Image 1 (cartoon, one colour):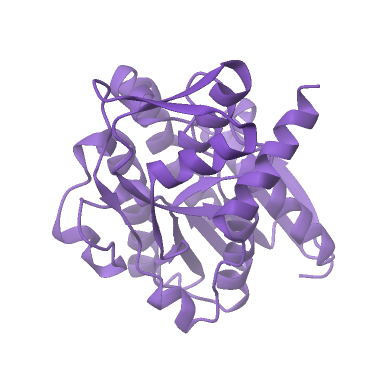
Image 2: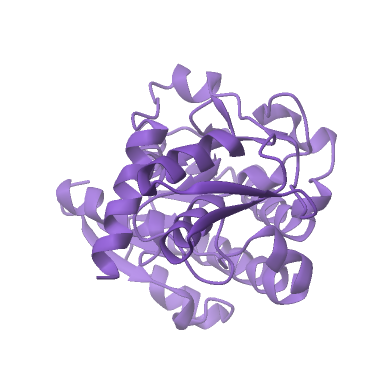
Length: 294
């Protein structure tokens, strides 16, 4: 991608920042568009896509199961709008390649999430609005590919992503939420009993996977994940051990889906495998958070 003009929407987010760094290291001329650009406006999307060779569309509304439950319209409707606008603008701009970032939320609860099973079921009730918003984005990409023979698109479905620059605010996900609690409280309170299983992937690994799929011109949907399930209990114990905190389980609180593990066979067949261990990734995230909040 040397001297190529590359647009990264969501380039100031957790995954976006890592992606921008990696692309710049490859010699790309990187441009960033974020939600303040108001990607719900078709004219704005047209403007940011003009002159681009590659587009990595990561922009999304940061959420959590709690947020999608409390603010379903504010979360899902804008995503559907700006995803459709960006796909249309990228096609009309004639870019060399377009990557759409979907989500683990598109899947229905199952033993293992396999790419070709998505359209056999509905998204989980715990990811209903977000899951459908991401699915509609995938459908729009595939519609352009089918109608216009636009075989220059990749679709990636990251698992539960965490890492440096994660959201530690009100709508944070499990790892940043537990790190923040451990820093601010004498004991580490965890919702549920710790039994739900999650597939977690470090943000830099996701960015590496995105570039890998584009460089290898992969046109079928691909899971980006560790492929290994870990319990909430294991995650909490890593964080509690770091801070030497006792864990308190709040079993009256909701736990979400019991199991979310992604099949990584397809990604590995294209030569991609996540490299960062969970403990290493959590330790890196803790160190960054503590340094930021000195």
